[in-house]
Image 1: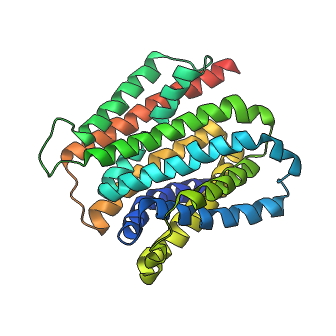
Image 2 (image 1 turned 180 degrees about the vertical axis):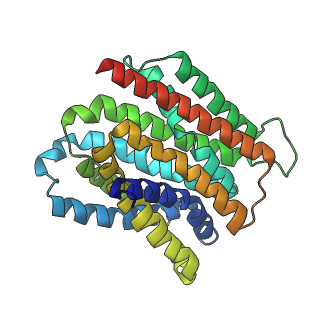
Length: 299
């Protein structure tokens, strides 16, 4: 029987891999920003109640509100909006494959902004391979209408870069605060909900609830499972496996998104797309391996 940690690891990867399909369903009725607002609202609720149950929320944490605002923007609001915009313009399988480049942008951000981030031959090779995979998917040299939407690709890259910057910011400014990860996730999601409340055009937002498939995918798939429960599972994995090993879960969503797109909704997948995903996955493996080795050497 697989262990609870293994089950949680696979479950989280599968949940994150379905996000692009659920976003596509909802995008047929409401705007990407509206999708993100509802996703954050329904994701915040399980986080908040679980944080209350664990008693990790503290009034004295309010003094760090500026950091929570920054994290709510780069790690939740902007990241979710960029991915929602990109997914609305791209096949869900392509969007999922591009999301696999998140660890590469994390490494690049850390290498540029953190002095203690090791730059090795392996990490540089992995980064180059990953970005080659992104280029093969985007194919900027193509100008015909059948090519991948360039704006959608840029949105996905912007979202991945936003996440990368958030990890760097968290390492420099959040980690020294000694906050519980569950508390941080609750704070940043709560602040993101408030921010999105002010920037979201609410006209027509209820249209998504007129379609059972889209509304269930948004509320349960994107919100409760994909945001609230996903945070809880991820922090459980970090606690049980360590941050670097747990981050390996990012290998699963692109594969899940590809399989869903190819076999459930009949999205066209070319051999170039498969090769590009292979480049991204191998590149991420190189970067992860280099970081794991550097941690072992430091300890």
